[in-house]
Amino acid sequence: MSSQLFTPLTIKNISFKNRIVVSPMCQYSSVDGFANDWHLVHLGSRAVGGAALLIAEATAVSPEGRISPEDLGIWKDEHIEKLKQITDFIAAQGSVAGIQLGHAGRKASTFPAWKGRGQVPADQGGWKTVGASAIPFHETENAPEELGIEGIRKVIGDFAAAAGRSLKAGFKVIEIHAAHGYLIHQFLSPLSNIRSDEYGGSFENRIRILLEVIESVQQVWPADFPLFVRISATDWAENGWNENESVELAKILKNTGVDLIDVSTGGLVPSVKIPVGPSYQVPFSAKIKKEAEMMTGAVGMITETQQAEDILQHHEADLIVMAREFLRDPYFPLHAAHQLGEDIVWPVQYDRAKPALK
Image (cartoon, rainbow, N blue to C red; front, side, top):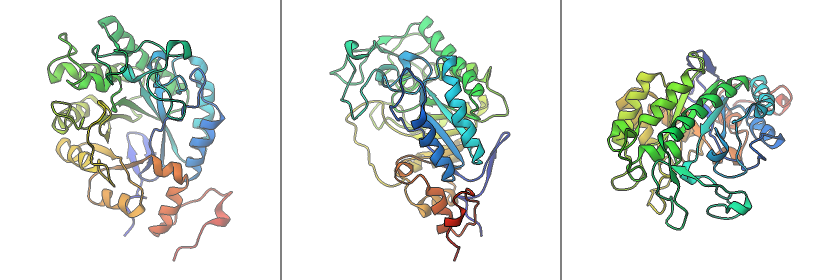
């Protein structure tokens, strides 16, 4: 019996050679949003390593949408050229290039971990942040400016423009970032959204901006290319966004043409207690997959081959989305295939090092 991990999957017109995905991981290595050789080698080496889909890090749809001043961006046409070089290389390895489009909202203008903590002052390249409501992420931080209707319209348009550039840059999958406490998540959760207009209050109002972003992206994104959405299935906080709302959202997104929910958790509020451990977020993926009858990606401390295989065997997800393990081992899929007894194709340049199957 062949493994599930190395069973191909086709979504719309795009085929993935296995179920292993490189999760978006911020590199904080850009100047003015431009990709460079670091991004080429970072993503390219993992394509050489056999991943089916590589999703470029949270890529800002506007300068003010960056998590840090060093974030990757796609808010201007000049960003396309280097990204196209990267996607061409990924495709040459038989892998698919995806991109996560995001806006950090109130969590923008922060330092990368190795440069400091908290918000970046204006005299060091920081900027005024925006959010669903004028509530800071942390009480020690400056409150964001509440987005008005005109500002919301700009954000929606920025996502659409970024999607158009993503297509020109050679990406075949878009993932809209609606998780981890960033702008769209800030609208979803009543802990960060206390608006009284059509974008606040009820569940229907709080999800409105996400639905409008999706609609705007679909105006420029080919109907036969996959569209993913990453969500935080729970805020891990009382009266916050929760797993039942996530299921209801997934049902709605399925009907709008979204193909897969990339299921993470948390990130909206600090100092919550999260039961971190191997596969700790997988139950949320399983719940959404079962109750919304929608494809999901599982994330969260998935580090072992059999662990990933079991998630698929138990129908808890359709894709395994891995982050830190890929930082430790760019060639995880090559090693996993050997462990599962799968005879997969290696890059011809590395074939002489391919171990024989037992």
